[in-house]
Image (tube, rainbow, N blue to C red; front, side, top):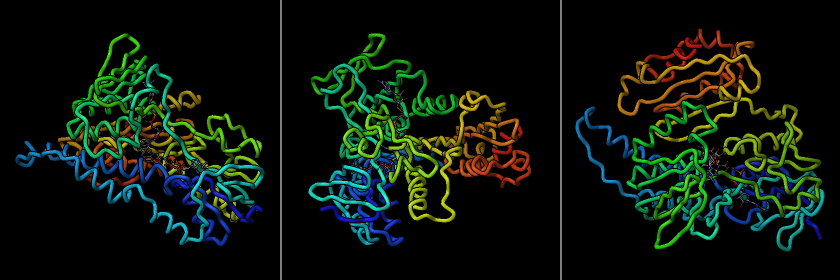
Length: 452
Ligand SMILES: Cc1cc2nc3c(=O)[nH]c(=O)nc-3n(C[C@H](O)[C@H](O)[C@H](O)COP(=O)(O)OP(=O)(O)OC[C@H]3O[C@@H](n4cnc5c(N)ncnc54)[C@H](O)[C@@H]3O)c2cc1C
Ligand SMILES: NC(=O)c1ccc[n+]([C@@H]2O[C@H](COP(=O)([O-])OP(=O)(O)OC[C@H]3O[C@@H](n4cnc5c(N)ncnc54)[C@H](O)[C@@H]3O)[C@@H](O)[C@H]2O)c1
């Protein structure tokens, strides 16, 4: 017999964990279902451990910048403390006991297993069946895309999960895909001495961002000794004698001890039972409205909605779902016009809203403003490692910013001001009247505004 509850949350990554905990704390009877680790990709295989690698790599790079600016310094990279920190501090050796206890402490009924929808409000996991009076939240995230490259499937290639668990580093690595995952992991490992070649099908890396961002990312990684093969998809992959060989579209080959596949993410919802609630199980994502409702009594949040593969988006949508389910008077409507994202390279590349091309594709009357960080007082003082720029995208008709990129030593932090401007549609003339502290890197925003 089905157990009667208020809400069932399927998938307890960042989005599902947040939503289920908040709903339970609000007094609802909530069941949370998760077959793997409570917390999902971000704390165990994504954001947090990858940023620990990046922090370590950045320390090495920064030490190498001492020469000529503050004396001399040598650094002997050692991966052991990084692996230990990820094992002990980030992931508890990939054990989610603390997260489960925290969730249960908030009042959530936790079920370890896979959830399947069997009808409106009905979810089965193992031998338990639940009937939810208010509804179901689907928060099942994404899995890595493995492209249909000849030979690839039969090889022992790595995904992000394998790289995050590394105890020792290979001498050489091939990285398929020059997006955020490929580039962030590449720079961190390259700084520990791994010889890396990035293979990217598009003409430029970080292809979803401004061309200036792609150029800067490539420049920074090449300086770290990374090789690139852009504009060419992998045609075939083979593995033998402890090495991978990737043949490219032009017939040339590249080889490496290991191969990381970082060619994007896809939803895995085929057998979730979505057809039982009138949704398409073959869809590329679960479409949601402004209250993140996917259908009657069904909400979807996080990566599975395809709105943005970011932890902050999963948390944002969780909040929208929670307040909608609770029937809050001031329940917010989701709006994605100021979606921020930061690629944690050195230099950090932060962006918000539309790129110039996206704005032009929308038919906007676009003006752009650009300034280089080294040309700012603080950038000039910073010297070694000061590369970066600020680019603003203005809707000339409305007199507001619709997008911005902030790249540089603290690009992700400087982005904060620009994200606020795009979010709140602050008039450009108001931004021009602001006082920008001297000598900060964010003061370069003033120069970019002057260039509009
Ligand atoms: C290497 C890497 C670095 C990243 N860095 C950043 C970053 O710096 N900043 C950022 O914002 N984002 C980053 N991301 C993205 C971020 O990790 C995701 O956007 C975030 O984890 C999405 O949360 P989610 O809850 O939607 O999904 P997930 O975290 O993927 O959780 C979904 C959960 O659902 C479970 N599940 C699946 N199917 C079922 C089922 N049938 N029944 C029950 N449970 C199920 C899964 O086991 C999983 O635990 C990174 C990702 C990677 C891979
Ligand atoms: N800092 C962050 O916020 C952060 C960090 C990591 C990941 N993420 C998120 O995770 C998601 C997934 O990241 P990702 O880097 O895997 O995906 P991505 O979509 O950003 O990049 C994948 C790249 O692989 C290339 N590619 C695809 N098939 C190929 C092939 N056969 N041969 C060569 N190149 C090929 C694509 O052209 C693309 O540039 C992103 O959407 C990103 O938002 C965010």
